[in-house]
Image (cartoon, rainbow, N blue to C red; front, side):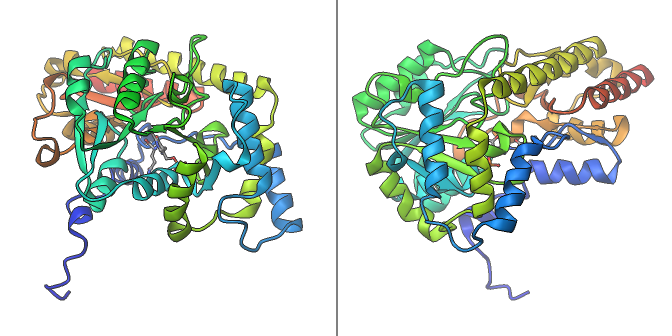
Length: 403
Ligand code: PMP
Ligand code: GLN
């Protein structure tokens, strides 16, 4: 390899993602993969059938760059149905190839080098590399278990006259946290005061448990023109490989984000867009069943992990719960951080999870060490069949028993 070919400096500082790493390790050790977040059952047959029909009978040529009209309309209708947004029209909607592209297009379309971006840690893995690649500057607000509450003073201090964007992920991966109304109100007030848009990663909007509901930041006063809502068909229809995402935002923001989208992917497969448009129109019962099914899985895994001896933190939504193995360390004869423990658990117990530390910025970026409370916390994905969750708990119990 030519030694003067060094690649992009910002991206070169990152390794292979924790999801790819743990999935590969799970395969190597024949472990149950509760690491990378994906369901182990296929999404609804009627939606897949709609995609197949569209593929065979519809057009397979470039759809319009902002998305097919039927899907833009379906997203507008969805937002009106679930959040009461009468003002949302298809011009407020941009279809992207997954939420990942939507987030990247939004960051690229809105930021310039030197701009500051306020984010909450733990954070989803794709945000920081893109922000660094653009040359923008992350201002991080750290949240800690067990409740991952927003420290109001630190949040206010993170804003400056250089702040150009806030990034918020609620319901939150990896914590399962649903930001409270008070927290959302405080964030909205700061966005309005500083006139800063908020990029709201809401891919888990329909995966909220215990009778609670997701309220988008867009619903708060002054946010209709500042919030950028990102959804994902992957999560809402248990079809994570489809990579169909959608943005709802004021048309002036959609235009800016569209400038990046047209050069990133330009468009998204038309058959999948047609099927997602159909899916978003499914009756309320579909969305309720999705939630209650996942809630049952969360409870099953949480109960099992508690019996094994983990401290299980509350998880109000998403595919994930977090758990602390500190109470098991003496029995297992270990005292190691979560990354090492996840490798050990995959190899020796046959169950893969991901360390929550992977969702905190590297110290070279944040300037502060990992909070102590997070050192021994791991994330388990519970969007798996009950028998798979039971087997994972059985393996963990046997592993702890062996000591
Ligand atoms: N944001 C968060 C918080 C996620 O967990 C995911 C899921 N992997 C994504 C974005 C990306 O979604 P998509 O697969 O639609 O790109
Ligand atoms: N969002 C998924 C998770 O958090 C992973 C997606 C990916 O592998 N990039 O596990």
